[in-house]
Amino acid sequence: MKSILGIVLAVSSGLVLAQSGGIGALKFDPSPAQAGKEVKITISAEGEASNNCGMVVHFDDGSESRNIKIDGRENKFPVTIAKTYAKPGTYSIKAEGKKVTTHLPCVGKAEAKLTVEGAAAPAKAAGPSCPEGWKMIGKPGKAGNFGCKAGKGAMMPKEPMTCAAGLEPYANQKAKQLGCRAPKKK
Image (cartoon, rainbow, N blue to C red):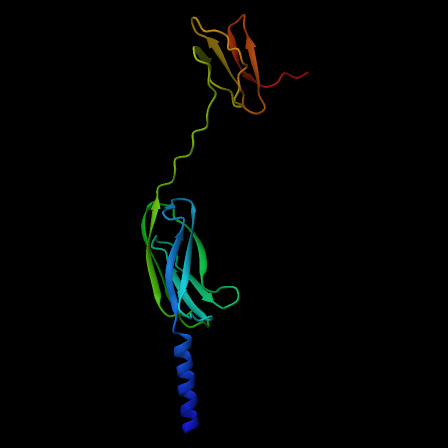
């Protein structure tokens, strides 16, 4: 009877030692994050964390929480997961132990606030432009081709215009026009 009790105590004591560490802290990269762009969330261990436990990560944006199994092979501390937040705001991210299939809950929990900033405004594509003193003739074509007509007193530029890929510059000094067009077929 004593030997059975000794085994139970040893096993119980072993479980306590195996569970002396656990979920430690959360780190975000980048921080602050950008709405619509991926942020990496890293969950680190504190002390000697178990190689076989489960946890759940709550993202605080209404999306489904993510269950993670620490198995010591494919998933082990530190664990990094990717997440994209659609809207700017401050989110409270939580990682806590949870039984996931056959893995008992990891010990401990961590919580940190992530600031998500608004998405950067997309850079405006530089559209076609005429030299100073020149005015655009109509609207640019679908291929980006366009023409300019000289205003009063405007001089023909010394250098040819810089055109978008697939277009070539043209100039007609007599008509006082220049612009970019599709290359002429030969």
